[in-house]
Length: 404
Ligand SMILES: Cc1cc2nc3c(=O)[nH]c(=O)nc-3n(C[C@H](O)[C@H](O)[C@H](O)COP(=O)(O)OP(=O)(O)OC[C@H]3O[C@@H](n4cnc5c(N)ncnc54)[C@H](O)[C@@H]3O)c2cc1C
Image 1 (cartoon, protein in one colour):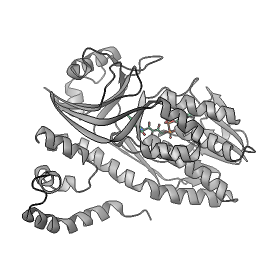
Image 2 (cartoon, protein in one colour):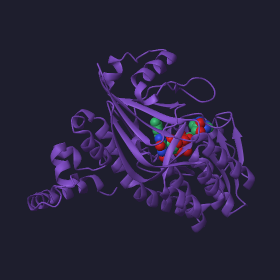
Image 3 (tube, protein in one colour):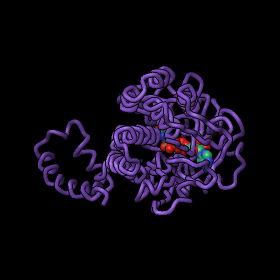
Image 4 (spheres, helix red, strand yellow):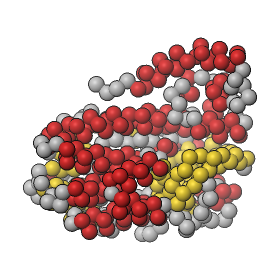
């Protein structure tokens, strides 16, 4: 089969290498617009579930990824200098470029063609192929040029910026800083021995109040270094490790698609769906899509049957992450609702931000009912939880209704 993958991010590269691994007869080309790998974002976080799936699908690249990923087992929530340390399940940070280098080398070794510096603006620009895999990210050109996919995009209220720093954070760190214009926060984690990722987020009001609108890139980095001076310990905020400084504030955009394929075109990764970055799952989901599409193409001789099975399987598989991401986005758009909790309570509630119930209960009551270790076993609390539980199920069902 002749296959064109548009986009050489994690989804496109992993799908190409897996399919070629399973059937070397396929003729697969990945078209990537960047000259040498995509520059966006320094690093990403992932959990053991991704590693297990990678080992099952291709142990060779999985081993290399595990070797370069930096693990950690705890997190620090730092509210204006008061730090709460807690143990979390093992997580990993990896430089995005390292991940892409491993995947592209493996793909090239298996016989996949990769055309860097080749932007595809429409399916008509592609050579004749049997399948077009649109893995060109959130702003997918292939998706917008393909009829019948019914994309839906909603825009978040907060501003965010994806930066790096030369400070190597020992723990996953959530700094929250109060400024004269309101709260601003971030999440920072090491992605190797030299750098950490630092994603900064704040409400539009804080962003405007601090004067970020139209601010030159270097001034923006300097101001953020000042805001987060206690966390950075004199280290730098960096727009991009190599190449030009890339300092771009954005609003998160949540994408869903009613259909994931039309004709000979199929969507994968961020071109098909996005989840808020605060749950750190987009890459894991993109790779999950790649595995599922390769599996289904191997399982079903007929392409249409394979695409239908892939869509069904992945829509169901990502539902929980989509719900969690929606709750997490909402949590961060309402930080003021939680920030007055005591630091330990705040830290615990932050970890529970994926709960669909949390927005519907006063945060202190939620904490006392579900999270406080001393009150947890009191009979009165048990009775109260019993009374609240059916209401949770109702809210939960509303969120988890399966797609039509
Ligand atoms: C601030 C932030 C933090 C994040 N943190 C995490 C995290 O910690 N963990 C995690 O798992 N995920 C995280 N993500 C999400 C993650 O980055 C994406 O979900 C993931 O990169 C999706 O992979 P993809 O291959 O589908 O798309 P992308 O990585 O977007 O790759 C698409 C590729 O297509 C190329 N392309 C685009 N248009 C064209 C064209 N017309 N022609 C040719 N090539 C084209 C692009 O250059 C790019 O290389 C984060 C996202 C954000 C915004």
